[in-house]
Image 1 (cartoon, helix red, strand yellow):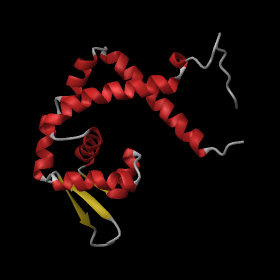
Image 2: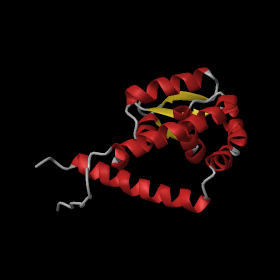
Image 3: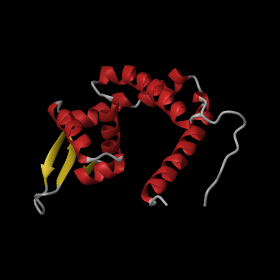
Image 4: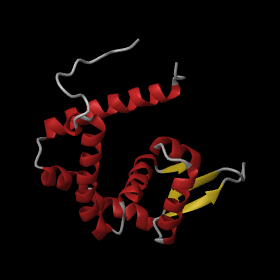
Length: 156
């Protein structure tokens, strides 16, 4: 099923492009996160890893990659750095040496307390109502799901 949207005028105007709006929003929001996460010693991708581990206690590397939608070439250096910083440990499973579990250290668990203030600080820094941010999150979740479906559908 093809859905065509009628646009008056030039459909190639930069300010009409979803990709441009997403790219600018991504850079702007990540700049806020960078400023807030720096005192915690985390980059934004490391923060996402820690969020997943705080939520799930421990995860297999492959499950963490699936959850974060990251391939192992991207995830492995993040885990190495977080391990070097003493926030997590990688452990080979006794029952399957090919599988590696990620477990938070005491320092990784303690960092959660400091990170609890980050979401509220992001909302405050953005100056956008929480309702608008929740709506944006819902729309972006739909867009991401649609993009994944489109990616999985053969062109034709």
